[in-house]
Length: 291
Image (cartoon, rainbow, N blue to C red):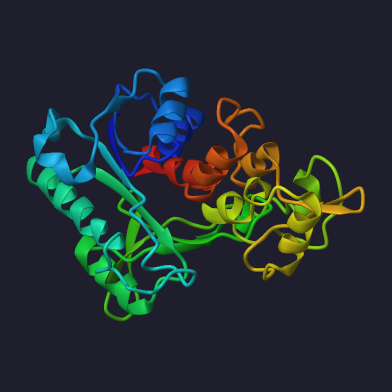
């Protein structure tokens, strides 16, 4: 396949394709975060970096050759954790840039496949707008089925579809993956946890709650314990509390323990928290050969 990945992040789409045995001939990545590009090129040095998604008309791409378009457009304006500016917010409106690119490719290759992901806490209004723009309604899958975290997400795709309901709505027909029954205590390297599942790993988890911001360890402990339970994942170890380490964060998203070894905890947490759950994407891609 020849793939174009927009908002590529840590390159989960490429890793998922490799893991399900789909050969990638060319992989174009649109990403601007330096350490995301660094991690991508470390694992897949043949990735072709094309730069800022808003400058897509300048890219040197044979558009008609694209077989699959991937998009995880920004969720900040859609998420319940954000300011709820909606799909027309400054960041989340980049979804429409993805739509422009997809429509351009469709005009040259009507059989192109696509996958778009966004947060499960998006409003019904915004989900409806995105669905009508893409011509298909999403499937909603929680990563808790395949990992130890609660991560509710919408996935729009034409990889497998069907008509459903009284009005015959065109929907993404990806079944739920089998529940692996992984719980939080299964994935921690040391210590104890009270929760059965981790709350959602987010991009700001390490940045906002990290001890690098508070030099005094006791003050850091106090700071963590006062954080709302929805904002932090705490692990008790040696009568102290800590945040997930890099290995645990990789496991929460279904990646191998050493996947982010070249990055520090903060950068790894940023990419993993803002990224896709690898086993979910593998599950979706497993239907490509069946469509």
